[in-house]
Length: 204
Image 1 (tube, one colour):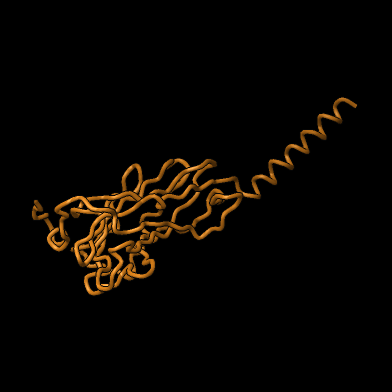
Image 2: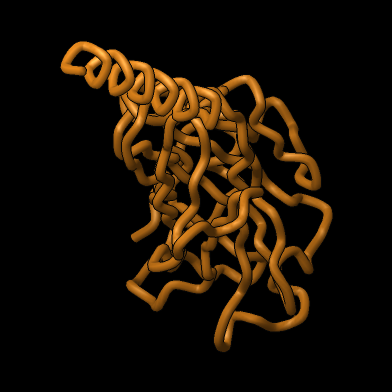
């Protein structure tokens, strides 16, 4: 049976009484085009990750928009990518201090980013709605994922106006490759040519 959750948002959201299929597709995108089939950025560059939700299947009916959501953002390798945690943007949602959060910084990413759409029953019905966006930067050369995962700080990861719950996260992760700055590569190439010239001059 459902139990009442602590906090204002916990009281507002409906706790699921039985298991059901995920009602919301969760997807992500990055403001940088694919290079060779993957996202590629330079060290020190800043880019934006956007996270979206959309009702699917039988849940995608008028008046059954996303009422509330609660997710985590996990960085696969924090030595490669860094989150700019003060750039979380939840515009379009209620942003009520009692029922929303930009998340809590953790060693692995951001814990419990959540908000509600208390006055709009169509959010995510018939099209994607942005949940939030956040900036990130390339820290060192390598690869890392940015993955959205369910959180249950408020009782469930998603709740709709008609009581559907649960997100589908199969398309909620992106792989980012961080490469050296072009100037650094050019400098390395120049250094190699100089060493080659010195080597050849020595043995003439």
